[in-house]
Structures are given as C-alpha cells and as structure tokens.
Length: 98
Image 1: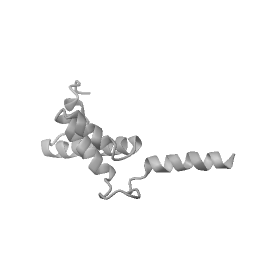
Image 2: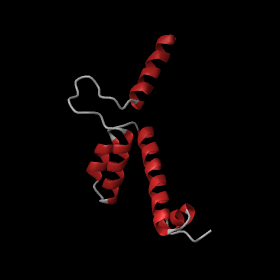
Image 3: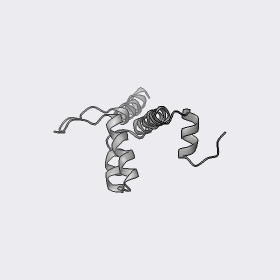
C-alpha cells in the first residue's frame, strides 16, 4: 500500500519539478520564462511555440506563471495610465466600468 503512495507522490513531484532531468543537455526553463513565452506565442497566434512552452513546466506551474504575468501587466498598465487595476482589467476584457 505504501508503495502506491510513494509511486503517486513521485509522479506528482515529477510533474511539479522544473529542474533539469538526467540526460538533458540544456538548462531547465523556469515557470516565468515558460509563462512569458506561452503568452507571447498565444498573442502571436503561434500554436507550435505555445505548445512547446507549455511542455517546459507542469500545467499548474504554467497557470501560476500566466496568472502572475497577468497581474504584473495589469498593474504596470494601470500605473502607466493613471487608472485603477480594476478599471484597466475591465477595459482590456471589454467589460463595462463597474
């Protein structure tokens, strides 16, 4: 029974790991690099590049990185415009002002 838990735990750890695996000769990608490349590829409508970046880290890590990138982008744009982050986010999504 404990062997099954260990095996499942190992799979989870492998999915979350961003370090270089044995036998790989390139440096590992971190989640922020993956998120930046993924978002840029999506903006450029480059599905192949987006798929490649999505493979660099686990789906959970990519989601976290994309979320962090979105937050930082909205904050930076809000400062640049002199508006609240909420107003900028709603404007970017084409929603009416709250």
